[in-house]
Image 1 (cartoon, rainbow over the protein chains, first blue to last red):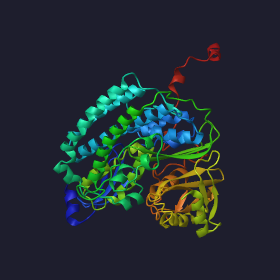
Image 2 (tube, chains in turn yellow, green):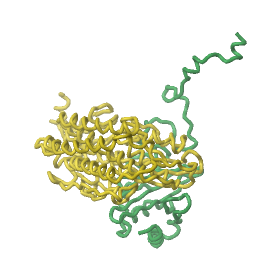
Image 3 (tube, rainbow over the protein chains, first blue to last red):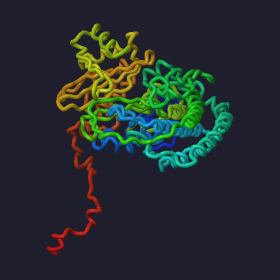
Image 4 (spheres, chains in turn blue, red):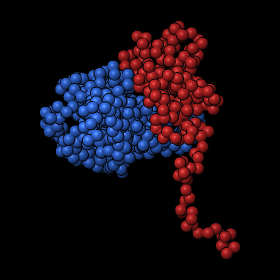
Length: 375
Length: 179
């Protein structure tokens, strides 16, 4: 403490270590903070603690067998990571996917996005000091987990998608249970907005903090909700469509600086709240349009030669997969570029001049998930 | 713009010594790509970003492939203005793997290049802070190279251990006969 006061008074610099184990860091990551005690001069992120070498492992397992590993690329949003891998392999092998399976993929992905954003906004409120909203949203996420567990038997690492479809069809009565939940969830978000989104104290902590302009967001490669919060109107589901998204009608939420500056922490929070509403609508539309038929079509022997890339709108933004095959049962090279990887990069340039306490708001608002950075 | 038009625009600006060729999407190649001279990749990248008809403002991905004698750096670009994409490839020899950094063009390339340096050992000239990203500073070698072998130990810690199930397995028939 004495050292802290000394540093602040004398204008000297102190080096503060945050992490690698810290409840606000969303997994195991570490920051080296250079500060005068209050204002940060530099923040150096140190990542790699959760590096699982998934790209190296991928070179040793069959295309179909990598699916459970993609769960671990982003365990908070495993369904969209599954989807990215499936789209990449199916593009490379020119596999057919039954229509019903495409609908089930979108239903599962959007439910997962809803659950993932619930974690993000709940945790962000908690990081800033409001504990109550987190368990409120965690309760909703439990129900989503129950629904997804009925689909695929697990609550976190789903392994639900297959090359050529999905693992199982819907269990009996699942549609009705899902619709019941969505009807209930429609009432949750207005309550949540009253509780935290429009809460004066929360807005004070988030508005005008670490605003990222559209140009900065693009230059630093922010994607997904972080990019849209900065006012850039781009959504992979609408602008580079895959699966059955062209048949669905949804709005893309864009940050506008409603509480302060465009691209501030509050905008990033708000965009995710809006996306939860859109996800609920997308699941409803899919259930209404859901066709009958098979959910899996076994692909011909998967030994592709060539290369393909796939882009999927994951919960943390556009996930990019680059895949090279050499006619073997295992891939020659697999590369995932994830949303958190780019979001983590922006922390160093954007944290200069912020208060130490606001760093937590910045990290939480970017929704970085450590395993997704390190893979 | 489609990739043929982009190829023509780049060829007109840089000439065939820099823009080495266009591989169209055919057969297993699902995304067309341009092959570029590695020593000029930063110039090509800058042109791709600032030229208004191209406007590739987002570097989606930068990674490398181990092709035996050489490494191939692969750049995937996206334009938010025109919604078109482009892939660039640049080969560098395995023994002297270095090429100019694209960080001045796309700040997002900072960690991409650090990752490629970490996992493949490719050096990016002019990178502001080329350190390992994912692995510890003292990690031996670059594990995404195909010829990388896991050493038996790291800092005195063994990287493999005996399977205890083997220890408890019943002795093989020949051993039983001997006892």
